[in-house]
Length: 528
Image (cartoon, rainbow, N blue to C red; front, side, top):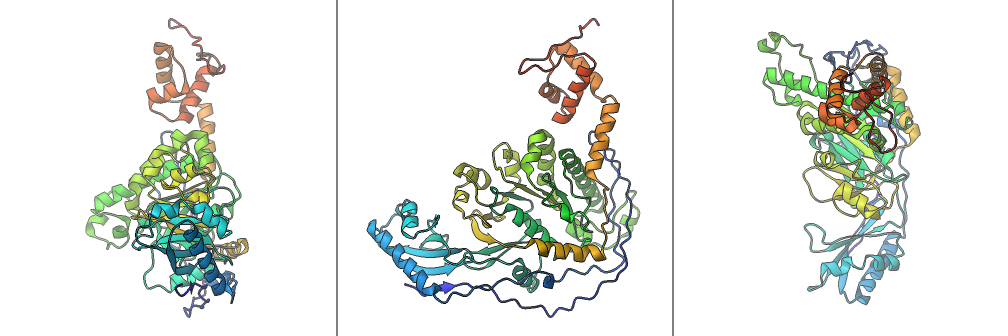
């Protein structure tokens, strides 16, 4: 047996960096009147010129709880015993192999198995359940072969699982020489290496996992990664939380573009706003002859810029839009959401707008082909079936995860899945950081409320006839056909608006009520 390598948590080293005390001056709260309609968006261009009166000081990692250090002096002996059982199990099935390197991660132990010449890799993979039985493991994962090595990887739940602390990861990241535009601190691999990513390189992220798998903790970890490393001038957040309890505590942060959105119509209004903001940013870049938001923020003011007729902001912050429980929103109106999401995902990278979609139901109705094609970076926690794993990752494996933060990450530009244990942060630590930020910097919303904006539009639409009503009436009378999907197709509008027009036609006794699956009756004759 090779010498066992045991990866232990890195000791906490407090930074010598002196964090200056923040001024107690308040940030000027600016009320911006945004007239954004859901149907025919009357759009007032947003400006991000609200400068903080006092320099923004990042929250100290001392606000977070230290990780518990677990020491097990007998672990080497127990791992060697497991390796012997593994070799004996393979031998009983006619496979001669030796265990090489053993990596003990936070929750997973990885055994590198070197089979003798002539052994088929698929034969080892077919023994997955037998190996799990002999090792007394809840579930195992076999990587056949390990990329770049002449070995097969067998991943087994660790004998002594350990928590991956977000505090430890933040300290490691802040001590690095190069920093990321939007840091995403995910967790640690089987070998104990930190998994950090840059959202601007992804450039969008899809997260899926069953209830209790660690998906909600992961979203909080992503948000905290941004709050602990980015100022409100650099990164703005937009959050949608249909459950109304997962993300609402972030509403009063200065990073927020608007309060947390909890209604489906508010989410649709936010997506429409993001599309308009994307187009507005592209227009500015076009006039200045710049390629992306990074070049814009590094530019020097020129005479050409001063002579432009359009208003040019001093800085364009990066925007991260997080949609939790995306399946609930898609159930209300998938057609209204899918189109703007696809547009943003395809085009918004250059102008600094990034999406994070999360769902606990990764079905084909929720994660459609269009969405999958535009979200190459994905995180899968434990799911209920191989089919769900195929949908989210395009391959099986997520159904064999352990839960409680055990994840598979598909990084940008790589076809190899990375297994990691997600970082954990306690609710009390989240509240400490939020209280620290909010005590010094009040919210500075650009949009007062997307939910309220959507409700106002609904009231307007009930009191006023839809602009396409007459056109819809002519179509119904000429074709003698009336259905919501039919109007959607003919008028090229979303489901919600087509359904509203159908309600108007029914209220005016043009068409009859819906009776089961039968087509609606046309009550008005053509000569009337």
